[in-house]
Length: 433
Image (tube, rainbow, N blue to C red; front, side, top):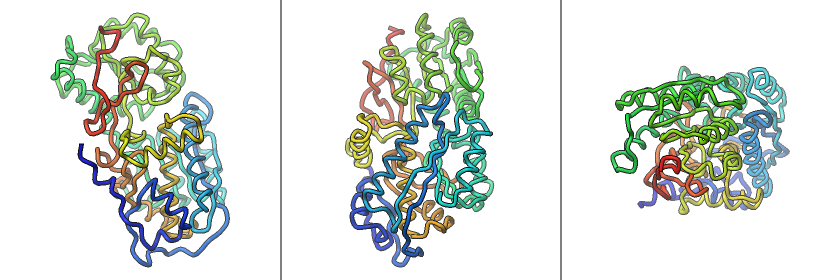
């Protein structure tokens, strides 16, 4: 396998000198920034403590995601402070719970962080289901780094990118989510690893923009490839404890492929446990939830055979230094190398902010810091992060942020695509043998 070009670290020149020598050496090991020109830094030498805000669902159905977001942010801040800070500043985290992602909870949280002048930047995996808060942070000229719901981010920003100089997404466009499961299924059929009986698929979606947009993309791709939609069901957004009605319809349809885009971990674990009580001979793909350690805790050996993917997790290559370093640091702090994917996002976001602050020097010059973020090209644990100026999304691809596809096998998470990084191959699920 050819070594990707972004594994070669570009030199860091004058602008990065705003970091302490020790901070620069350690940060460069974790991520590399495009070289700065002489005199690029416009910042004044500063001092004091900067608060970084965190919007996260710390309680409610997505609390496991919120925990990961908080852990990633805490680890990044701890490391930056241990290295002496950035441009004379140290950091402190201010966490705000968006609970069940209701508009009221997110609005209250945003207001709390906007009103606090000591909060110079805000990070999150996701906060609301529509990302409406982007407009609030842009109007307040507050740095906002986000990961989730990129379709919503793109829709908001692409109309007038200049209106959002302080808002950037470390996650790429989600279009690949609506294509890759179909592409892989057809490739397995071509290789003789699996034979669809009727090329039928049943889709389950949740009543929220993230789930809906991915399900819509999958429907479009399946139909374009000659598949028949055997059925679709929408469940309310929130906790779903009884999947009996939905699974009854799935059993009646007896499809070749089942897709559930309700991303909440407990919901997808419950769906899987109830499906396996009397399974159909169908491949099962679950959107996002199985990436979370909690999914395996809830399902154990019942997880074997489940398919899922992720645009937010570690790049799973032993030759990719940022991922390997974060695994070691995560284990030292939290006792496991299973780095939470939401934690990867907030960790990367804070490190990207710190590099931009190192260039600018003045945390109060949010537009300059935002411009430095948008111009950055850094290696983070989730891939090479470079931004599309038209959408403010990170670029997607095997040489940028790769879409990773997994299957649980023998109670382990096995990467089965992309080819460049995979550690195993697809297997027929045990309930189909």
